[in-house]
Figure (cartoon, rainbow, N blue to C red):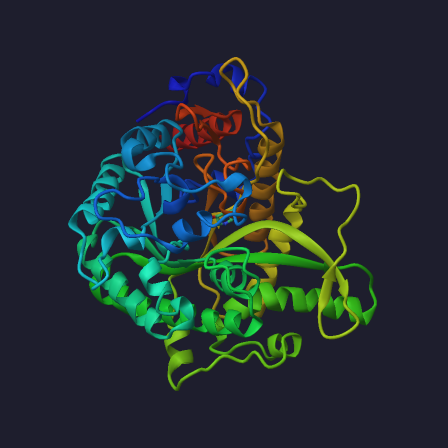
Length: 467
Ligand code: IFM
């Protein structure tokens, strides 16, 4: 087992530890999993290697004006070639679990036949994680749809949901026994709304009706894939990951309170209601009249198949007021702490959402916080990165998780976003979310102080546990 003492700057980093949770925190329980997360397109690079096909993000990022500074994922963190060293780094930071995603265009050809070289990459990765005793959380879809499927309509085409189930079938036969937890989709809200509703993400379409139809096919794909995963890999757990947003009202007027509720309907209930209640929230279509998707008989039953866990990604809150009609408009708060993304730091939002989900969904499955973190303009100085805002951010969000657990919500683990600085979609490489700094010219990795403090906390837990 790696000790935190093996870290380059750990003695200095932990001398005045501003991170470790208080003894009363539920996070000291050794069965509360602490992990780090990444996603294929954001770290792998090697987009033309070993038979990988183009994805919608290759196309989108190569389109002028779509991504800041014209950045693309062509090289990213070069993880496809550096995966062994990256897993050694993960281990040296004492992370107990690793959440990563599989690139669909790497593992299947246009006819749906397996691509042995692409599959072998993920097999090697998983086998190495198993050797290291790291729990494996694999996401099937973190936004890199094969371009040939987009050319046939992408998520607007119902057939894509069935192709997704075929892909889940292949992966769960090939990787059975190596994955502890499967996640079908990462953040369907982003795929549907940013991809098809406002065009900020690939494939870059902007139409409200498209967004709801794409969401329906994404969720259908999730339900079909979940059944397949259950049949092929019964020992693993199966879930889905939703990004959730906290909306608060700018005033106590009934209109503003309704606007805040509708913000959360649009961000949260749009996904969680079909999954956990088997129906879309009616208020969604009051907010967006005339956008009801085409739903076939049996779809909602497929979508609401039981989940073993729910992944929750949380980043910030949005303060809103009524738009004078059915919806909401953002009223940015002044004098609040923000991150490099401009997102407000609001840990209470995570606590309140978790407690609210517990009340609203009587069949709420166990929860993992599958992403939480922040971007800052981190620089290496004398070989170190002192990311003080992130340390405080993570500590406060972990305290919010602890508060939710104490209020009765079953939260089983927490993954920091992200292990590495990486390709932050439309913002390219400028926004740094990693607990490990990446120099994109040299590909040198430098653990930030936040990483060292997390490693130190996990080492303390292990020591107490006698591990
Ligand atoms: O980088 C993304 C990730 O891919 C999905 N969730 C939000 C992160 C930060 O924007």
